[in-house]
Image (cartoon, rainbow, N blue to C red; front, side, top):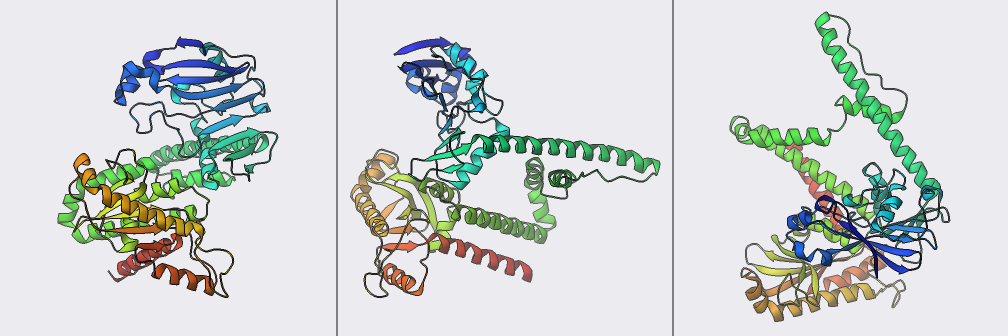
Length: 470
């Protein structure tokens, strides 16, 4: 039952709708404004059908649950969770929300009062999707890097860390949250102070040089943050994002002139950029490999860097579609069988199916079947059968899929199946058992996540050696 509804600057902010679930417990929904729906190419007349949960206020148990939302219609994640992994942020009965009133909240005005009483660590304007304020987004990033949890609970009743029962909750103690807030604020202050010092020094030295008096170095201070930021501001560390964009823009604008006048330097620069990019990718891969990420994060990673799959299997890959419905009438339609990546050979148009699991997926059973012989795990066997069934469904539906999708340059002559799963087993017997099994898996080619990383490192070493010879 909707017990509170009032438009609040609908042209720019959208509206709120408050529903009572039970006494002293309400759910708050966001209905996007017409402008955002038009930008998202959605029908403004159906605005109510796009309402999305924004907030839960549980006065009985004194819990406030925020659903961080992307509210800008010109973005691809419109009305989806604002963060990549975290979908909810719950504030327990702690000092951090001492200003929130817990009486029955029944109208949008009441909800805005609740939001206004949130601490400055949080976004208070629902038109911007709620969640943590931008300077504190790094707390979200840290939780996503350290776990596969989808909810953060800030509380004084639990120690910091993920729960062990698989419910997807990452607790942050009130004390740790406050420490992170203070530290991030401190970093901002050091950065601002360093920038002021460098700017003052730059202006002073320009005039000092004209007057023939000694120049000065900027005061770095004693704190490590201040020293680092001063070095960055002086250009002695990594370029800022703005500077990087300026360099890239300049190179793009003058690439043709450089290629004509100094082709050897442009070739070397291109090689340097490719090598640095590859090494950054390796560092990122290693960081992800050390975490406990869900399949979706790895699918996104390979979606951004499809050349890794090309390199791993020696297959001239062109991606046709990720998350393809191989059991439906269209690749983009609903189907019972969804493959992570459908790709094709760029020369023959023959298709291949890629299934991506996680590095933590077990590939062998823990106990030997016989002395020194280990059998494949249920996860590995099931993943192979999954890929084979996807191939079967795709081959059955290929003609209809091509007609309905109007994608005629794909063929199913001999659909390849590839599986990225787990890590290379430890111990000679386990390695032997794994190799014996996968080398006899003629229809599904299997590679582990750490093998892909090793291939990237070998490619980097090859490029660096080639660069040294030039």
